[in-house]
Length: 191
Image 1 (tube, rainbow, N blue to C red):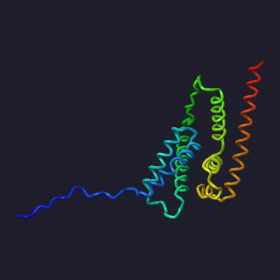
Image 2 (image 1 turned 30 degrees about the horizontal axis):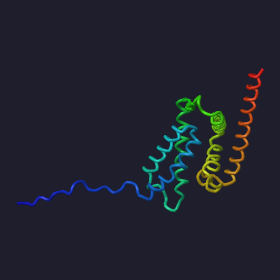
Image 3 (image 1 turned 60 degrees about the horizontal axis):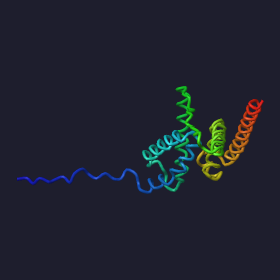
Image 4 (image 1 turned 180 degrees about the vertical axis):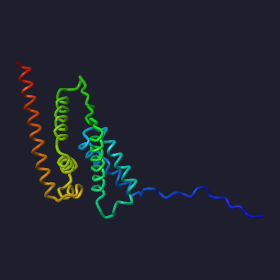
């Protein structure tokens, strides 16, 4: 009689993602979400963008080079996916502006005014060219140094400084123009 060996079951699969990689990714999620929100303009789109970036990073863990900055690699993935989405939207001629702001009538006046001001800033940021918006988000929102932002954007530090200066000036002009429009509308309503 031949002896039959019992198979211990399916071979155990090695972990698909290293613990260190997943821990870094989880720790970075709030910063990625903040960055994505600045790019996309809405929380829902930002969440989708971060999810897509995480999926891509997990699938391409082998492409990450140890010893390099994990956050820069992830910011670059978010930025690349966002640019791809913008290009796809342009090709499909979609309108990417989805108004998801709702103002409750029972909220205090200061909270309503703060939301309106924030919406105005978001619209002004959305009008910036993509390179300026990315730089503004990396430096002012996420707090990266010029050097770190330059690594993420893969441009010289001087380019980051120039883009940031242009973004700040353009943002100020957009906001001042919006204030002028509001003043003229308020003046017309008062008459």
